[in-house]
Image 1 (cartoon, rainbow, N blue to C red):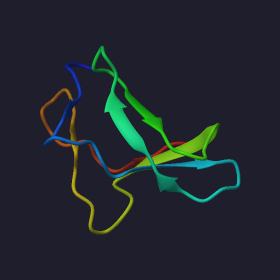
Image 2 (cartoon, rainbow, N blue to C red):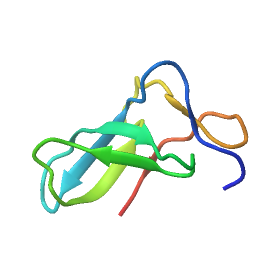
Image 3 (spheres, helix red, strand yellow):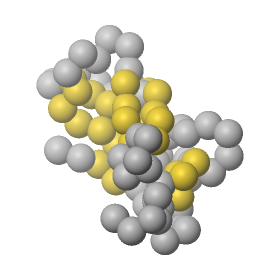
Image 4 (cartoon, helix red, strand yellow):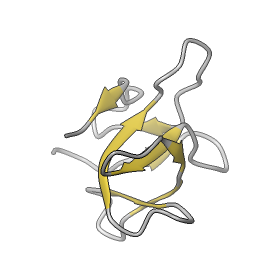
Length: 77
């Protein structure tokens, strides 16, 4: 990635994680010290296997990528 991730506003939101076979739950997010990754954690999810961002019809971007544009919705797995 070129450039650093940065928060849009004072908090980073709209992230969710799920354990194997589990439901998605809201996750706390922070940008890593090097600005290249988003670190997630959620109470009750010790070993997440999937994460998603902006996975709703009414979400608002809370992270800007290295290009200066908001990060698009995504799902891992």
